Structures are given as C-alpha cells and as structure tokens.
Length: 204
Image (cartoon, rainbow, N blue to C red; front, side, top):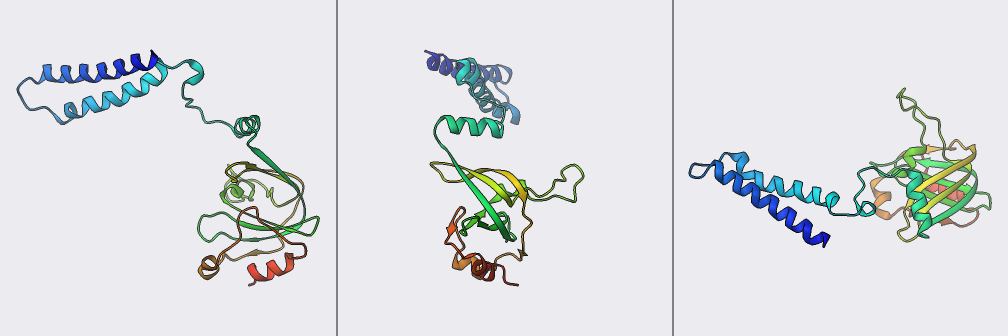
C-alpha cells in the first residue's frame, strides 16, 4: 500500500506541475525554467516519498556512520575479520601516485606482512598543518587489522604498543616494478624474508 501511495504522490506532483505551467503559458512560448520544472519536481517528489511513505526504521539515513558504528554493524553480521599481529621492525616504500604507502613489517615470528592502501593515511605523521598535526601511529609493535570478511578490504588498523619508526622510507616503485607486479595488501611472506624484501623493494 505504501508503494502505491508513493507512486500516486510522485505522479500527481509531476502532473500538477505540468498543469500549473500550462495554465500560466497556455499559448505563448515557455521560459527555460518552466520546461525544467516537471523534471525537478519529479526528483524532489521521489526524495520526499522515501521519507513520507517509509517506516522510520527503513528511511535512508543522511548521517554518515561513524567508524565504531560501521565496525559494530559488520561484527553483528559476522562480517568483521580481526587479524592481530606483533611486530619487530618495518620499512616503507612511498606511494607512486595516490595508492597509499607500502609497508613491509617483520612480525614477531619472523614472517613479513605487507600492507598497502589509502586507509594507511590515517596513521601517517602530519607535521605541516596545525589543525591536523598528528604523530605517527603505524607501524607499531602490536596492532590489529580489521577487514571485511567477505570482500577482504581493510577497514581499520587498531594500533597499540610502541610505535616503530620505519628503518627505511624508500622512493616509490618504478613503473617497471609496478608493471612486473607488487604484493597484494595483506600478503604474508615466509620467515626470514625481511632483508631480502628490503633489498628488493627499498634499494636506493
């Protein structure tokens, strides 16, 4: 019933606008705004119907959800994957364009975790903007990567322990390296590969 009422409301609003415009300009040429009026009213009526003919719980929210709300919602649906790590050291490769920084982090068991993405911007130090300045938060000795279990993308990194300043912050990957292929975000390399990876990806 609500869908039928919404359709009648939208259709009636559009027809009413057309009739009103015709009554003002029955014979003469219409101004440009009069020609666009029915379409504009149609869009406004569609938006209004979302609120007028939906129950409160099903109305679209115009408020952006906070990170805590997003995580709680995914957790309730069983879609939040938590990956805890302990780290010893790390090196960084700067972004080539806007893909985010690349971090190779040696874990406490000797394996190496690779992370890359714009989500890592949130943990980078900012020193040139008084309103946004912040210290480095990642890499650190204890952290947890929170991912979407189905899609696999990273949502948040919960940082703890001691901040680990990167041993090296290397120049961006070359086009040749990018064409040859770089690791996937979240990829874990075998034990003892840290120095080899640093030589391969962070060589001056």
